Image (cartoon, rainbow, N blue to C red; front, side, top):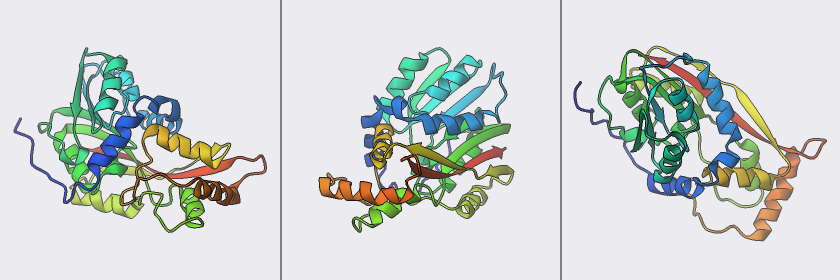
Length: 267
């Protein structure tokens, strides 16, 4: 096995601020992450149930919910996350038997070549500035005939949130997500030529727009690249809540729509 290749992103962007947002949310993450668990469970269908003797890289592991499943299936698990406090909670959940915990950025993954049987990365890659870099690293660390499973959010996600805020102010309140075409281009740039993609649309219903905002903050996904993170005035929040009622259902609930990419990469 050679040393890890130096594949570097063009820009680190707001990675420190993103890491800090997830650090702050580590204690509340599990209470607000039902959507994240639901999407991750869809990816599990592409993994064998018996992982005895296999090495699984959980890339963007969060508090270790899925790492624990891999551990229980017999795998040696490498937990990677850019938020140190998330890794602390993962260690509390999984312990040290067959486990590694590494603070790393998916765009600067310093693991050795061809050392991983399966990569699992669910709803973490949307925080990368250029998807081609994590895809290059994923391809590099996979063993021959290895497999990577990933999910990420696509353009159109949280469009209700974006539209409601657009009626209140001119600031950006929702991160820019890539299109399905951009995912395919990034895979081609990373020389991942054997893959399968699905594009489900998932709608989560909330009692109010504030409940959605509370969930986003609870998982640490409230950092918007390029936007000041100062406090929002109460009057603006009330106007936002009123604007969001455009999408209200007959039973008084409001939707949050996610456009999801589910991907399988074969080495």
